[in-house]
Image (cartoon, rainbow, N blue to C red; front, side, top):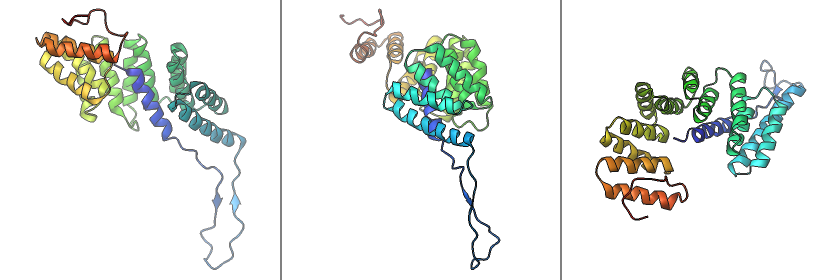
Length: 272
């Protein structure tokens, strides 16, 4: 369950929507008759703080562009400049967190995600991102409350993401009933949510409902690019259903698509 990737994608989507508001504008007098002489426009000058906020957003756009191109050094430099220009920008800290995760600096990522929630305490995306980081870094029980905070934000535009993360993390915490509830709610909103489908396959497998597990596993693999966990689970499901040929096909996919990442005992019967 790629919680961190889901969080990162949500962050980038939020940043795409962040525009650079134009604070210098011209006001005209609507009470003037059309044929009358128009007075000189009144220009409202930007304050230094306003100019810094605009430049911070410009730097965020640069950072996002570089990150999408895989250029982590310039992305981090631009995001750092954005945070210095506007220390109250949750987007800047969120982007710094995404970059830190890409670099494997998990402690830094967590601190940045937390800072974003402090700057935007009612923001659902920030709460979801921090919850996903907590769950992915072993603080599973703590993460669940953050998903509840995300879902409490009426302006949160992607509740399926928080529901999927909540359900997947509840499954890790051994809370099967909550996991089932949240995961089904997630696919009700987003039938192709890969995190929710993968977690539902795992939940059904753990519960011994192998036909249901197969159905969710197949939907997961049809929806998004396969990963090691999804293929390994698919092979285990087929083994339980007695279809050794299908199980072996998934294991072969593991070896072909993820060489060096195949589990030590994937359970196939083919010659290694």
